[in-house]
Length: 147
Image (cartoon, rainbow, N blue to C red; front, side, top):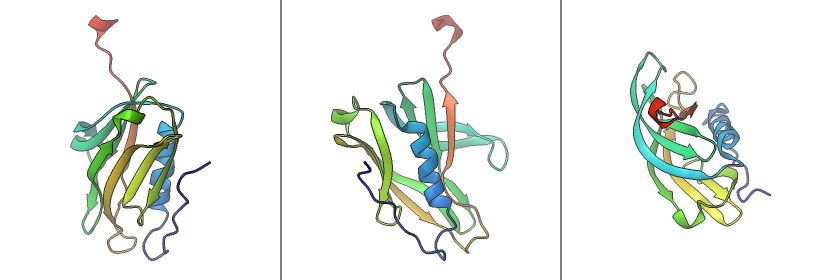
């Protein structure tokens, strides 16, 4: 059962990018626990190899889910802030939903929100420019000395 209903967006405001972003995040985190969530530097190859800042969610399955901000002229998606509820991190994530026009994202378990994201976004000049988080799921690098 979903704690949050799917939000409708006008076809003037979104071409499916934001619901697809939520679905990608949902596919990556549901069924796992969050070990940590922090903003950090990551490597991206979006529009050329470079360093970027992202929210990095480390999961109990040895994967990192990176949500990188994007901006393309007047279109953008950015993480404004996040709130991790440490009293709920021992619970398995059961879903991801949004409220307030995709500006509040909820990663939740049966006991409520484990992680809440405050997100700013705009499609810019519909739909000429790119927007939506660049979401990457990566294996955690384990140093050889630890094996």
